[in-house]
Image (cartoon, rainbow, N blue to C red):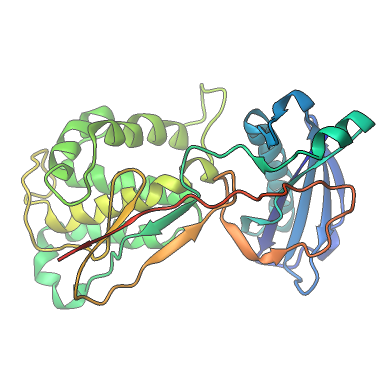
Length: 327
């Protein structure tokens, strides 16, 4: 049996001359295809062996296969990006995965194929409204004006790793601390605010995300955008809270002011949406693919996938946030 994984790659320049290729990266066979109506995007299709033993009760567990096949596809996408000398953007088309039978036994097993094993993290996550009329409130940030370029840089990144770097740099600037020394003061500050942040959540940002997202020297692997994307909304909310409400800038104290409050805002790791009743709100959300790896591209739909591809009969429902309204 074979597992098929698809990714959509768009570029700032036309990849026409390089878009049609076949390659092999590790154990993954890769084929690229042009997308009708687009001169700056291609579809990459990865194929690898899949054990029928991971198909049980109609549910296909591809957890252990995902990272290797996605990494191989990203390598091909990055090779094209380097060849073109331009940026790339990765998303998942629909469908984004399928199974192909190799034998009569495989075909029989796939008759019961209903869904992919659900990932543990949400595949839909919202964003807090972090906008503010700073031009009318410049007097509030005069003592932390050196942090403003970092706040602006956070919004400029087209990739998650770059955004994470500047979010962490903003925390470091605010508390004049780095690495693990930052965890306790940052938690002490955030725990008195509106985000319901837990100590283990802050520890995860600083100890488990920051280092492998920054350094690639001694580790067997390092983090990519897909590894951090679902954490960024909560970290971004925390960073703006620190920038606007930390009482003493460039100091390791955790005292808080009360001069900015997002609406809506996010609580808990699962990003429950909270907003004040009676106020106009805009809720923006990001939909990920069923595996929580990449943004779902709602415009990249394969209307006629190959007949040999077997798709789940009951596609996974997106797992997302709850909404809480406060009077």
